[in-house]
Image 1 (cartoon, rainbow, N blue to C red):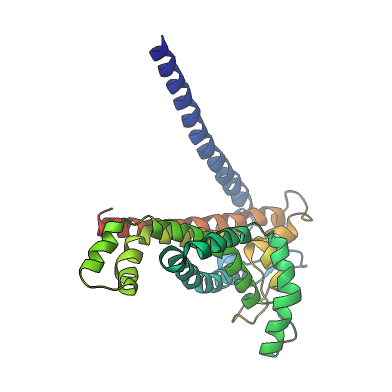
Image 2 (image 1 turned 45 degrees about the vertical axis):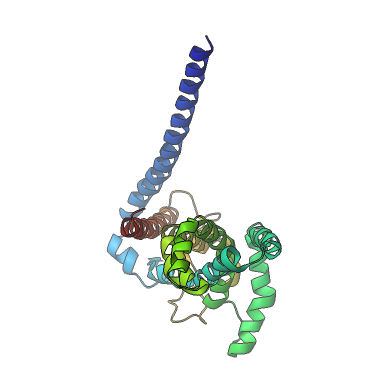
Length: 296
């Protein structure tokens, strides 16, 4: 009787877990279908090539312009800047916590870093306006500091907790036998970390970086507040710019329903969806390469 009851419970939980998995796929498919459906309605009025390569996004003008190349470049620029800051800082911090920090330092540092992830993005954006922006303007001799550099620094701060936490877990999970074998060959702690531990933990570290990239590309409030929201084509990190997410957040609440402008916002959301998906696919490719190389 007990055995049959256990089998029934196991079967019930199997159905529940399978249902939740299919539910997630259904939700993702529904979001993708909604984006594609509305994007096709937009492309009935605007040519896809003109949309992707156009140099101006001004849908409320007398002669509306629906080019999103400046938005794509702006989003890529601020995300690249954020990752250029966050990746080396995050990996080095994770390595320090895992390999060098004492238990007392580790018990203080890890919760502090994890608490950083709990700070609302609007607070980070506010600090960018009142603290970081004026400092950038003063150092660079600009009229204001609301630019790509400001947004990149703030996004790096927001991505750091994820990169550090996941990377530290990946480094900590490497078997001690790897390190012991390295020490037995005469390598010191630094050589072991660089040549053995980090390469062995590369799949987990790359996964951490991809999570950070997704956070940077998809962040809205911080870049909306800190980058100046200028629709012009950015030429450097000191230019004001507008990202895809900021454009959607600013315009979606006021756009007339089922107009070309309305469907255009779904079209740029579709572009953002594919940008994030491509970043994840690239990360998955390198994760599989490292796993194959190390025989994991």
